[in-house]
Length: 212
Image (cartoon, rainbow, N blue to C red):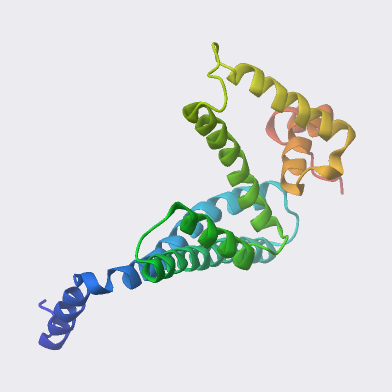
């Protein structure tokens, strides 16, 4: 069934507008908002679904509400950050007539303070995720620029050993310093595996149902 003439005309007008270079910067900001919302939902929804049903207690309705709330928070925060970052980058380039590296840092710095400053579980997870990758990237950049000598051997095995040694030490003796989600995961792996009563909660279930 063909689309009505009015709808076809509207689509042609919209597509013509989207192709205009003069509006490219503003439209890129809008699409950035869209992509931030979609990506945030795609990342958070499955993660929240798994973590909620594995570790969270409560009714099915409460679990679903928690999943939707976490997904909305991640999606909206990321959408607003991309919108702010791209908008500020465009404004700085327009004001100075040229793009400089510092524009990216300043736009992201302000956007991060504005959008991710609340210390909640979602923002904390996102920032911790980024921190590990930033540290890796800075080390590689240091080697690339000659500030750090290039290793003669692969340091990754020692890095992995150090990370695992520290995280288990913190879990066993300074547990409150770790994120709640990491505490839950490690409790499931290292403490729940110490307890069982019969074959049902040894192989089939993690914990046996309370006896009636």
